[in-house]
Length: 214
Length: 240
Image (cartoon, rainbow over all chains, first blue to last red; front, side, top):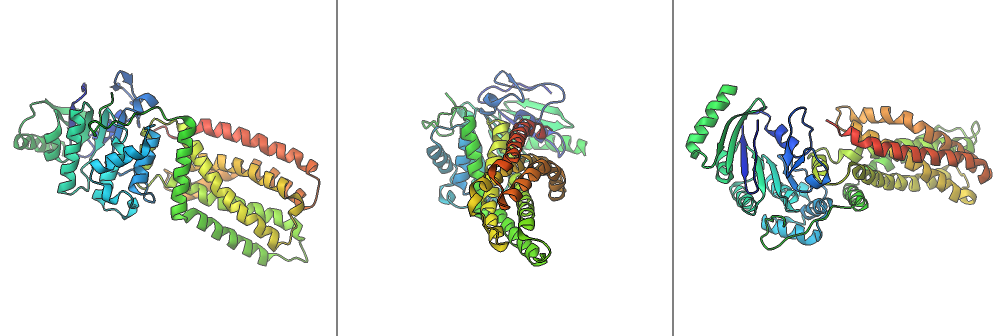
């Protein structure tokens, strides 16, 4: 596969289980080393060093939060790890933006899955990343939470960040993306740049290509 | 200028310093343990139980307390420490929080040292409670040599925690982590426990501090070796 994304681009990655979507995301996040080929973020080959990692935010279907800490403490810890200058203000701002202020001081273990996912997103973007990698970010979110996240991601994209979303949720992803790809067995089997085919048409294509894999 | 999801509100970043990120990780781990108290309580429960069993199994007419107390002390330190060391990287597991740490721009060595500092705090806390308890139960007067004894205990704690933290990182992703950690770590504890136990026995017997200077130097040497080697080795435990 070969693909270049510019600032403000949003790539939605679809594909059946085992297609390699999460592996690709972990490669881009510097968590895996490529056995062949290369990936580059802002001119730096991955896995790169601290400079590259500082520009990337990572959301996973796992929350990557500490249950014993409050939502605010989790976000503040992430801010410290990224060298954010005003940790408290940054955490408060991003939690407010994601509608998480009301439960910011509640321990994460007491929050619902959807609330935890909002905190997880806040943790990933508290340092204002220029690249956001999101693996199933809509997991556990109700309709309102999904809408809030979609709005936040659109805003992030419009402010110039590059976003890669791995998801099975076509509705939200197609509304956001400027590029859509369907993966199978570690390869792109379809790649569309804007304008992306309409939802119904793309859904049919996705089902057809996924069914081929099965 | 970095893009922000908060138009007009930017939070400037700078590369987090090594010391700052190390201390932030240590603080986070200590806070989690203070909230859950799972490690401290289980280690203290183990220490009390072990102490009680040794005490009631002890025949004071056959074995002098001064001969038994150092061994009891180091058995408690070693195995209660292992309980906490297993938890060290275990807190990162349930939600894959380690991925977030590894994706952050902090050095791998800072992650290791942050964990080490938190573990050291926990081990020292258990030691601070166990040492007077052993002295009291076995009627060993430690007042005259308490400072050198504390020095020996602290030096040994550094070596044990340095090795244990590394092996905790290696074992945590395996299915048999609870079994694997002691199997991996205990052989490497020997160079620390032997001089520490010998020095403890001599100090409790009322020998001069100069007589244990060699053991203290040995402990310090192993501490330095283990700290350097384990810090440098830790990033390799993360390779996938």
